[in-house]
Length: 451
Image (cartoon, rainbow, N blue to C red):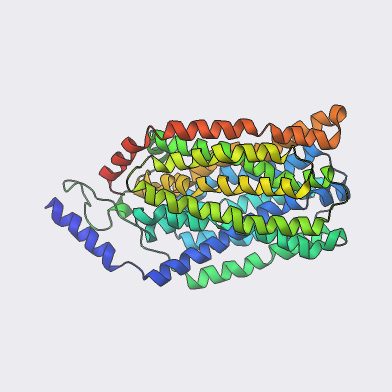
């Protein structure tokens, strides 16, 4: 009887599977949404030197704007939004969230003082909380576990492509510093509303994947997931018992601590350290680096992990660790050399290697989680990630830099603050290596539940 029910579930899910073309279209649109997420998130770091000059801010104030003001409500709102996404239309949640964060980004361009800009950044964070958890859940329902890391790596390309577009838009509108930073905010914020409409009217809410329940349980047939919607508390408890889940969450968090700090402070550093540089050219080059080297690293991370993972499940944790071991020296020397473009090239190599942890980490957040709490898994994953990385990286770098300015000056203070990022990168490597010792056992437990 139990086998009959399992077969019925598998047949029903297979027969209702969307076409490959439609799956890829949904993945493309969600990736584009994620790109807008990072356009709106990254833009304040790119415009930082102009905002600082216009509003008369110091590094500590900028650090709060780039980090914790955005991250705090972004992380807090992610949990209740994920609870909704495990029960209601994920497409609607993403469309509403995209409209909110795009509108607040545009509103940032209207801010006349520090407080108004801080409120707008908090609004952006609230909106963006509804982006990734339901998107990850949709992708996991559309793609089987063997292709999940690759699909989520493609989705993660929204990060480098979004950052690339933010750099290109800034270069285009600033025109060497002659235009107002407010124009850039308005120009990158408003198109997101149009994308929300495209999402709403061209993507259907997918059928949720069902787990295989024992034959003796009530509802142990088609639609069992609909009859087994856990509370927030039980969802969190089930996730917190998985060592690999925690390891991947902390590994990506420490690595992203460094990446977020770099992405929001690197333009400030180059403007200070290399007086007279062509800011437009620098923005274009960083846009190209993010759209090529970083994007390639993100894609390869998912591609290699899926293939290596077929013969060794440890690959999902070992690959990020090995990549960061290679990338850390490049980062260190990028802050030591006195030639601008050599420094930029070394920084680009770090981006290439560090992109590798995104696909494997997000895949484990979905694969190891019970099926009916996948959106919650992503939300909690992002809660850990963003409190540590997005909230901590830019903010602490700004605070440290400002504290060192009186003794070192603005250039050396920021350089020193950035060098401290070697510590979280080292922690990331250590955690990924530890996780590789737990992943095989946790994968088998997930298989027993049904992936």
